[in-house]
Every structure is written in structure tokens, then in C-alpha cells.
Image (cartoon, rainbow, N blue to C red; front, side, top):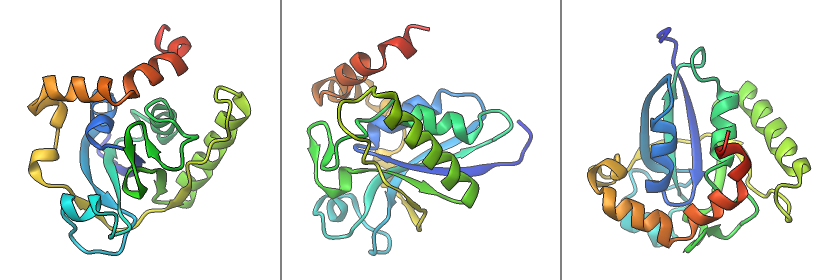
Length: 180
């Protein structure tokens, strides 16, 4: 790694399901589950789930852009979600489970907008891509028991990812990419 790190923040529904795909990539220093986009300082999981804070469940990634560029992070993000669903993700419903790309710079904004447009024009999805590209706000790490959940509770993580419908949806939508 070059030592020049940047941050990327993505909301993709349940943050448990968003850590592992990024954590496994080269150049990733950390993937933190947390809350962002709302107005309440230092919210708890219960407060965010109450839909009163305005926060999304999200992950904040610290990465080396020389090893794993932001463009690749955004591409990987799209492959973890249903970007056509404005009401949440899979069986997790409500504003805290909506998707978003939170940009930390104008460069990230432009990259994310171009990527979203390319995905929308690809016709991979029968409905339009509705995931917003919005400015990053304060990010609050979630409680410790949420961090690296896929490592701490691998069986529950796997059954949740499958039972929510996420795994099957992603396998069907991205089969061509995943078979390469």
C-alpha cells in the first residue's frame, strides 16, 4: 500500500451484508459499519431503526486508491444492492435501509454519477436506478457487536444474507460478472 488513504461511504441496506465484499479486496485498510446522513449525533442502532434520526445504515471504507481505485469500489457497491428499490433493501424496509453513495470529494461525485448513468443505461435492471449520490455527512460507527459481523457470527450472517433474498437476487443479477 502507498499509505495515501481515502474514505468511501456507501449505504446498501443492512450493513452486516456490506462489509465482507469490500473487506476481502486488496488495498482496503478498514470497513466500518455505522450510521450517516441524519441529524442525530451518536445515534444507537435502536434509534436508527426507529426511523426518527434520518440516518442510513452504511459502511465507511478506508482504502488506498493506488491499489483499489474508487471506480472499482463503486462498481463493487452496485453488485451488492438492488439500486432500483427506493424503499429499502430486500426484506429490510424503511429509510434507514435505503441505498446511497455518499461522496467525499467532487471527484468521487463525478465518478459515482458516471457509474450510475452507465449502470442505468446497461439495462441490467428493468426499472431505473434510484440510488442517490449525495454529499458525505458525519459518520458514526455502529456498536461493536455490529462490526465485522460476518466474522463474529458467520452462520447467522450467511442465513441472514440468504434469507433476506439478497444472495439469490445478486447471484441472478450479476451471474455474468461473478462467473469471470
